[in-house]
Length: 176
Ligand SMILES: CSCCC(=O)/C(O)=C/O
Image (cartoon, rainbow, N blue to C red):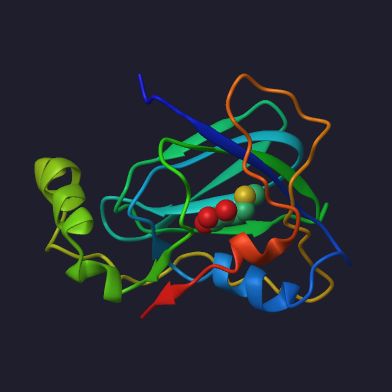
């Protein structure tokens, strides 16, 4: 049981978000959060990348009906695929204070140390950080992509929705 209490929907698609290039670039920069990244894909598709045991990126293609749950402290990145469109339900156990902590800055956080102890050390992964590992995925172009992050009132859920009427709550403060 994760105990989700809050939700919002986010659409990442062309032509809708101020500073979309910067936001998408930030999604695609390796980062972690001090909370779960839990997303149910409602429409469209995209990619999440996580680090494999040897530090290489592993890419997951997600589409409508997929649920992705990344634990706190797990480095990852997100990008769109050729469809350039994804709509996701974001689920939170706490009132979200959107924080992206970039690699390797995230290594200093307790949540990262907990993640490393809980998962990576048990798997025999090398070292406490994988942030300098090489990537086996070529960085995709961000051109002709944009995002529209906003509250979608047409979605109904038995969870209290956030009153995100604009993208200010998703301004995505960063560390590192
Ligand atoms: C399709 S959800 C937007 C991407 C996002 O919220 C995130 O945190 C990527 O790492």
